[in-house]
Length: 373
Image 1 (cartoon, rainbow, N blue to C red):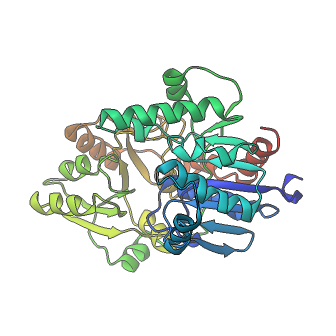
Image 2 (cartoon, rainbow, N blue to C red):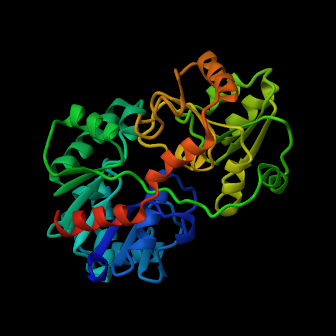
Image 3 (cartoon, one colour):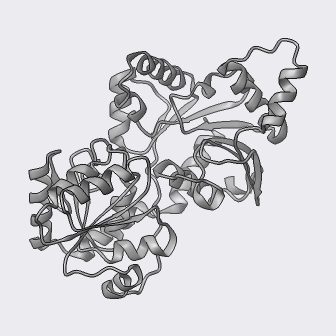
C-alpha cells in the first residue's frame, strides 16, 4: 500500500552505476535497490560520487555538486556571503529542497556535516548507520573527533536509525549509548537467473587454471586484499580480484613483487560480475572491518565456499557454512586450503544465502520507517 503513496524522499549517499555513480560500493548497492523498488515515490538522490548537478531517471532525480556558474552568481549577489562549509552545504541543499520539496531526509552518511544543516529542519530525519569506518580508520585525531561529534549528533537527532546488521547496531550503541527507534534492515542481494557452467564463465572472462580463488570489493586496504595476496604466495591457485578503488595500484604492485599468479578484473558489474562469481572455486574476503558483506552473499548464491574474516557478521556467513579466519596471512592461507578440501554442500550455501534476497520485505520495512519514523 505504501508504494502507492506519492511521498517525496531525499536520500543522501552514493549513486549506483546505473544512476550515474562512478566509484560504487555496498552503500550504493543498498541505495540502488531502494531506487528501483520505490516506484510510487518522488525521489531525490544527493550523491557524492557523480560529476553532474542534476539528471532525471524516471521517478528519481540525482543531484551532484551545483555548477561553478551557480556558485559564482551566489558569491556576486549574496550580500551576507560567508565562504565556509556550512554556507556551501546549506546553499546546495536549499537548491535541492526547493526543487524536490521532500518530506523525508534519509541520510546514509552519519558523519557528514550535511545532516546538521538548518535547511533540513522540518523534514523527517531517518539515518542509515552503515558503519563506523570513517571514525575507526581515521588517523587524524582532530578529524576523528569531528567525525565522532557529527555521528553522535545524527544518531541522537534522527527520528529512526536503520542498521544493516546486528553487529553494527551493537557497535554503535556501545559507542554512543542505547536508544529506542532503531531497526535492523539487512541489504537485499539480487539473485541472478544463471545457467552458465563454471567453464563457460571462465571462458567469458579469459580465465584458466584448475583452481581459482576470488575476491571482490573496493580496494582500500580495509578489505584485507593485501592479506589475501600474501597468503597466495607459492600457492597452486590463481587469484582473481574484482574491484577498483584507490588501492588498486598498490595491490597490483604487491602481487607483482611477490610473484603471485593474480588477475585484476577492475570494477565490474552486471553479467561480468556474475561470471566472476560463477568461475570461482573459493571466495575470500579477509576484511579488517565489515558491516555486512554483500559480496560474500553474492558468492554464496552461486554455492561457492567462502573464507571470511571474523569481522563478517555471523548472520551473513555462519560457522557451519563458512571458513572464518583471523586477520593474519597464515590464517587466511590455511582457511583457503580448508575450504578447497571441505565437504560443505553448495546447495546448503545457496539456500542459506537466499534469505537475503527478499526484496518485498526489504521495501516493506523501509516504507514503515519512512511513513512512521
